[in-house]
Image (tube, rainbow, N blue to C red; front, top):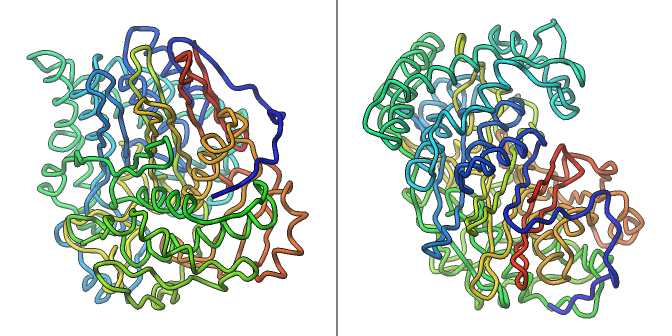
Length: 581
């Protein structure tokens, strides 16, 4: 993978890398970073601080995250030298099936409660706190409760996305009350208050306060209030009124999965992801493809590098569509997909002078070579392709060397807010398929294949890098570019994040109705001078704006191998901010 850096000295950045001896935090909003730092100052650990930041982001970004959707996380436990994951991903109601949507909705996935899976974030945050945290739910929920009840200044991205989706929010009166409170989208700087959501947080805090038996029992009482208590009854009443499929048993029985991470070696590094219930292993596969592809003596972000890495992305996405789905229901051949032998063979198909016009064939594994041209056929849907359903990200490293990396997600634009509660149930069902040939087809109690995928990496056996981003199908592509900028080219986290970025759209989108754009390659302005040559090679170049948010919002923390300092970066493409001490 001989690739030359085109940065012989440290590049200039909009912000400096943030460096501290004790801890570091980087999240997709400055108030969430501050919430995490307050927890660390109280003596909480990385898990306490990460959960606080995650819940706070749900309040600050209800357009793209929400407080009760998904919350996948990957955690490094320093005292055990162990990496663990919590899926934080809901399941389809047991009565859901492709047949239901074919019979009643013509094979379409309607807006509203029928696309909702069990809300997972509260359960996931509680499990992380109970097992690995040190503080109470009330302690870590304080910032989220305060910002929901008292409000905060509307930020640029929130104002922009609400304005873009105001027709959807207006479909549901309770959503309009939150997102269009003045009969219009909020303007940047105006107070944004979510009183019902604040009262829901208060109910959870009160449930903890009524419990006896210590910290862990109190946290379990929070979870029970949401999944079996008064809040659960309010959720179920809404689903019954709206014709939803979720039952009391579905909500009560749900637990986030605890699963071993997936990992690969990459030189002196080990990269860790969550399992194939999300697209995390695709990051690992693409890193393997990068390692085995012979770029030659080309510079980072040169024409050749951009073209060839884009073609590697396409190889990975073809495999994602052919193989990835909930491993409890689907045999996902990660043993092949993440192997050196597979990568070495797969990269042979890259044409250095010509782009594959759509997607290449999937690779051959122990399951054979699936025929997958059906994957990019248009679905039978009149809905517009939703390109900004999004996510958020946060990471923390504490004074003891524990690491926390999470990508909470699920905004409220495709299902209505539940009256009186201030949140919607998880809309993550919109990442499933109704076509039975797809590995992520809907099935009873099955998990959707999730785009959010937190990651971390070790170097020479020590925690070295935590990273992730929002961005849907851009996530893996942005994450790999940032990781390579840091691990291969030695850029500090801020420089690695701010480097110009590109991404392919030549695959089926993860969000319903899974539209795709054959051959489309997005370039940031600093790379647009490559456009004529890339188009000559068969790419359809579409520009991104300068520091546009659709290119992702990467946050990262590196741990200096010599000094142990925590060095954090945060993406200026969004409201991301890093803090350290």
